[in-house]
Every structure is written in C-alpha cells, then in structure tokens.
Length: 516
Image (cartoon, rainbow, N blue to C red; front, side, top):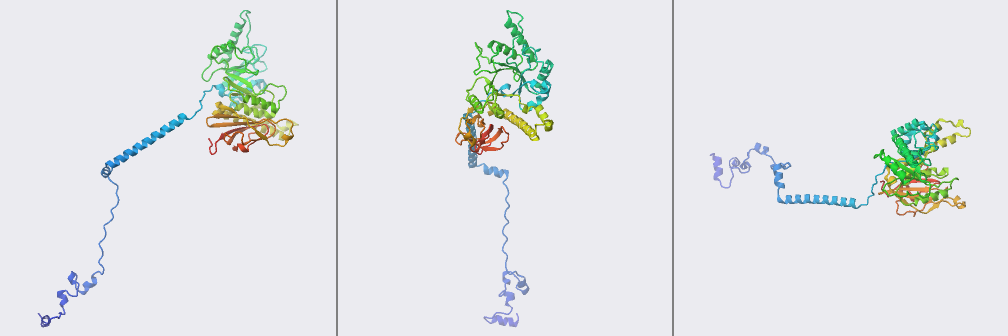
C-alpha cells in the first residue's frame, strides 16, 4: 500500500480518493454496469418495458371442437324444440289453406259443347257478291273475326224437298260448289249449319198407304248425305212438320252415326211464336232440340222506336233461366242507330249469339270501298267516303273485340246473369221539351267467381248519367272492354260515367286497388 493511501486509511472518517474504483461508492458500477465515463454515456436513460404478447388470431372451430360444443344436452333440446315448432307451424298453415279453399264458394264449371261456345253468323250466299266462290275465299277472314259457325240460308229450292242433294237452288250454286264450300269450311275450322226452316222436308210419296214411312226414309237418306259432306246440323222452325218427337228422334239416331266429342251434330229450332210449342207425348229423357233461336225484337213491318226496343229488351232481360240452350238473334226492324247496341247485347247475353249478315264487316265490301274513288259517285264527297270507311273499320273492331272477349272470359261465356234495374237522370235540356218519354238505361251483370262484367245500354236518343246510388253493392271502379263507338279506353268510375245516345258499354269491374 502506498504511504498516502495508508495514511488515509488510518485516518478515521476520511474517504480515499480512489475509493470509487474499488469500493463502488458514487458509481453505478455496483449494479453491474461499468463505472467508467464511457460506460455511463452508453447506458440508456429509460429502461424499455417488456413487449406485450401478440393477439391470438381467431380461427373457426374444428370439426372435433364443434361436435364437442354442440353435442351438449342443452343444445339438443333447443334444436328439437325449434324443429318441432317449424313443422307444427307448417302443418297448421297447410291445414288453414286447405280449409279456406274448401269452404270458399266456387262456381261449378259446366263443360260446354261446341255450339255453346261458338258465335253463329247467318248469311245467304246469294246476297254476297260472287256467291259461294267468294264466300269460300273469305272463310279464313270470318274465322279471324271470332266466328265459329255459319248458318247458310237459301241454299235449297222451295219447290222440292230441300233435303235431297239435287234440290239446290240454281241461283245459289251447283252441288259441287256447295260440297266445296263445306270442305273449305271444315279446313277453316268453321262449322256449317244448313237452314231448312219453313221448307217442305217430306220426300216423294210413292206409295199412298205408306206415305209417311216413305217420306221419313227419304229424309233420313238425305240427312246422311249432307252429314257425310260435313254439315254440322240443321235449322228448322217450330211451325215445321219436322218439329215433332217422332221426326226428331229419327234425326237423333242418324246424328249418332256422325257425332263425336267435337263433331256432334245439332238441331236448331227457330222460335217464331211467343211460347215454344212443347213436344207432345215425350216419354224418353232425350234432348231433342240442342238450340232454340230467339229474336230479341218482335217482328214488325215499321221501324221500331227506341221505347219499343227498350221494352222488348227489358222483357228478355227479366226472363227466367231455361233448360234449353238459347241462341239470340236481333230480328224485328230496329233503326240503324241501334245496330251496334244490339250487337253488344247479343254478344253478352247468356247463350250463343246468332249475328245476321252485316255488310260493314264483309271483307269484299270493305275491299271495294277502299278501291273505289269518291269521284265515281257524283253524290258522294271525299268526306262521306272517309266516314264510311271509318265506320266499317269501327264495325269490324267492335265485332272482333266482342267475339274474342266472349271466347276468353268465363263470365261472358257461362257466368251467371243478373238484371240490374236502376234509376238514371237525363243530362240534356232537350229532353224536357220532348213529348216522347225517354227510355231508361238498361243494365245487367255477368259474373264468374270474383270477376264481374257490367253491360250498360242507353237505347234512347238522350245522354244519361248514372245515379250514384244505383247499385251500392257493386264496385265503382272498372275498365272499358268495348263500346259501340270503340272510343272508350282505360279505367272509369261509375259515379262519373255518362252514356251517350244509343250507346252500349261493356265494363269489367274491379275492387279499388285491385286489377284482377
């Protein structure tokens, strides 16, 4: 030891100068760090905290872990309960739906024969320009209008038996022409019914003692001949001798030989009296008459007024349901202004419409109108020519609209019928000065399930506004289907509807907010 150090050590309370180097005092060397100046400068001022553990990333359960977690008794009970509740709810909804369907009133669909679905078109080939040959060319056009059957009139000579195949009228056409017409009609899917009303159907009476038997054999032979050519049936009158139980039973036996599911032959009786004469001594449960053709208007020599037409229409609208299928024709002698109104009525009444030949929907007449020039007729101006052409187009459009609506709408085809008498007010000052009474608005309803069609008829010459309280149970909203002028489109409200003079309107009703 050096003398100085020794002196300092011997001297009490005195710290040696180099004590820090050995003893560690005044230095951090004791903590494990270097006590030199370099060591102090390199030491960090703040001691960093230890880093936290990294977040463990989420991973889906494995199959083994999922089975272990879901296999507990608690989860099994929950799952069984949920499955049970689901099937109970499903069965309950199914049972409620079935109960609603079963308990809901549904209309019964009656299968219709071809003559119950068809629109009949009555015409005489001799009345048309070109006769039978021109008619054969127009058959596809007539079918496109919605016509399903033709009633050919005036084919037979009244002097001899019309059921004989050699008794065709010379002014109409020859036998090969008529046979060609029947063949072409079948190709065009048009039925042909031969009108033999008011003609002598009895054959030659060669043997005096068996006159009736000989006549019946001749008629039966002639029936077979025309049925073989493709005739779909015959039209007779209720005043003819053929309108008897014995004759019609014989005709039915012949028809069975040529009838099928869609080829059934028919007998149409044209009713000429107020009440159809019943068949006497009828014991068999056989329908001898398929269609009874009735006229809406009674026969008249003078043009019938609006009041007379309205009374005749109202009489038929208040009719009772009948067992025999009805075919409606206009008949009578109505004014030209009511032609379209009566067409709408005929097409919408229950039964089969039998429309009389109309030159406005004749394609030959329309073609000649387009080709002809107004200068050919000095009395006809260009404006009149355009009005005629527009009128014919409107007539074709109305006929097509009514026939197609009837074919696709169950309510118009076989729906129920309800006559709707109600009050209406006249919206015209001229009616107050008129001495003639104005006919009321006529209306009826055709319904099938929830679908309702309203037919409104204003036969009079004055406009009418519907009374808001005329039918409180009916929906007020509707959409136009057809009208006599074919100028009404879109939706309408019955409370604000005004009918024009001589106008008929077909409206499909619907509840507010529903367009079904």
